[in-house]
Image (tube, rainbow, N blue to C red; front, side):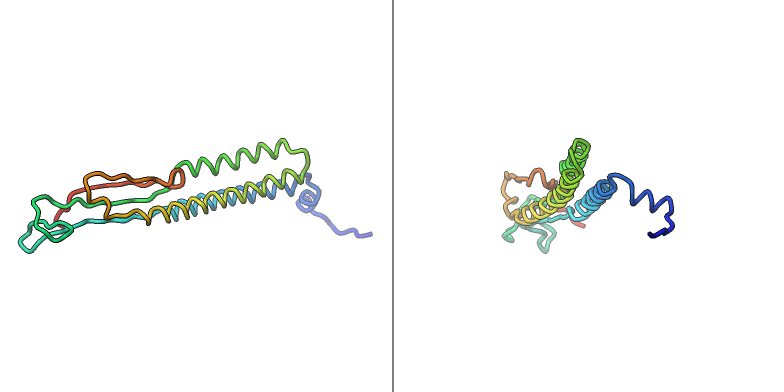
Amino acid sequence: MSLAPTTPATAAAAGLPGIAIIEEIRRVLVTALLAVFVYSSVMVASRSYCPGGFDGSGGFIDSEGQPTDQAPVCIDLALRPSPLIYIGIAAIVLITLGRVMKASDEASALKALNRAAIGVAALVGLAIVVSHVWFFQIPMEGFTSGSWTVFSPFPFGSVDVTTAPLSAG
């Protein structure tokens, strides 16, 4: 018979009902916070294209090097995070916590929490890959014509398009 001294903290941790569920909830929350940080940090990209420029006398030239009276239009694209991904992460966590509260046993609660952590990581990973691949596939030269369309990787990312005439300086 072992009479090892126990402190209130070790006794509570060893005998607290549902400690495994609490640990898994903490893991899901940490995963969600890290996913938000990574998504916010990695979902930033920009591209610019300015066809044409200036000739030797200070006039404008177009993308083919021909003189023109109008300043060429420069295009700036900026990729940024979509608010829908943040809503998706929050929804995964909150729906899972609701399922955990209704779980019939500890094993099903742990299974739901594990799936939530995987779901959050998969959502963010998919959003980052799809958005970046799509963003860098946009043909910048296609914006030189009078009208154009940008198809967004909705809901994974958001793209801002800015056009402005070429200016000196």
